[in-house]
Image (cartoon, rainbow, N blue to C red):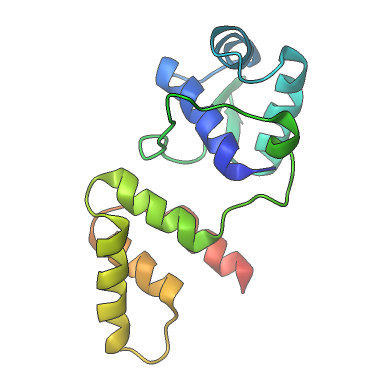
Length: 154
């Protein structure tokens, strides 16, 4: 699953309702109001999102497992169902971290890169991704999902 597209779809649903979402909320918002997914692919979207831990189920409602505040959805956003369920289009971790930095409004991508490079100049044993995580964390941006993903990649 393309997690970037899935996060945007979940953020669209989250922007309409804040107390959890049912399958019918996903169908109404994503299929009928926004015409982004056909109604017959909503079940697959929900189940794959649960498997990828993008959403969690609590008391019969689905909740995002990430902060939807930093997700930017363009006005002309559209989804190709094949691309959505393809594993080959996942953005690299560093790109998603820089997008989160930019979306937070606390720094630009360029500022995050400059601060990470400054941090790296005095360090020998950390990589660039770890430096970016440190910069984002210092700026008060939630990096828990990135830390968990980085730990899983080792």
